[in-house]
Length: 410
Image 1 (cartoon, helix red, strand yellow):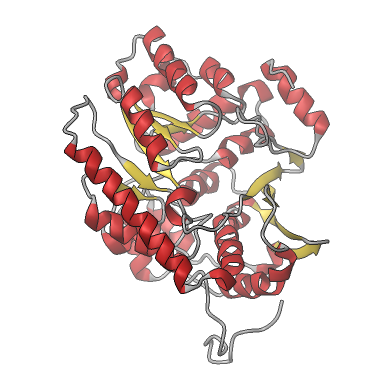
Image 2 (spheres, rainbow, N blue to C red):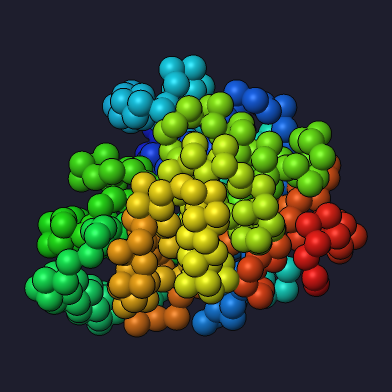
């Protein structure tokens, strides 16, 4: 990687870092890292970058900038002020904060390259180390890609669209329609944002303009800065990891959920449902887990059908749905969130995590990029999504076996 730090540790003239704080990532990277540190610290894992759509220009053109940004990322450490903030979250344990105090990302575990016009990023090594690269790498790719497009006209269009969203929410509030549960939405836009500065402007604007509806952000740095609630529990990688940790494959979801319960003992109680599809998840989500978890998060498939399945499941178990929450987070925009709210808000609590359509809605085509766990401890892992195109796995043999175990057609 090219050097861009002076001997005094200052950035070169012309270099503008994209990530300036290790706190500037999704909360769930920390909430997943803590139980992994406690129960599986020896895991070895591999994460790979994928762009699912066609970019406006080849991502190979930003390789050098991505390398420079990752090199700078690997110089960062948590400050004592940041650690004090994290330690103030009641579910964060003191030994985990001590681990973060000595933590520093290392470039030896991440490789940036090109494959023709494509950008290649692979993070491989101890899972409790390399898992933190994911969100930072995605934010770096996005901002490196969009920097050459960040004209005053683009930002003006972004601000116009932001004011339209605020007007929509204010009109909704003026309607005076009373539902049993309130409308709450959150910013989930770190990984696909137009830029760090734009995400901050969006979050600050929503927090000031519509605090009755805007209830938090997944970006821990911004949550700290603006006094917002940091939002997040678990992602696919957490459950997928249990496909390669010695439990029977058919029991990996129960093992992951039980590990979470033992770690957090009532906190952070929203479970992700679509690692092998909603039907297979509900087969494992028995009365024990239904009572212990506060709710479920949707991330693929038809959201209305998913929500109805969740409500029917709670009804079968004789669990009061009004004490639970459904969090929707799959490619949402505000109109879709409002439609889902109207459909479910009299029957169960809801929440809406909106990403790209909050932090990269500036009139340009966003990148559809991910950096996913592909193997753990030398074994493949997979996600069998409820949405076509979101299945992640290069090993067709393992995919076939996973489908067979959970009786899922290809």
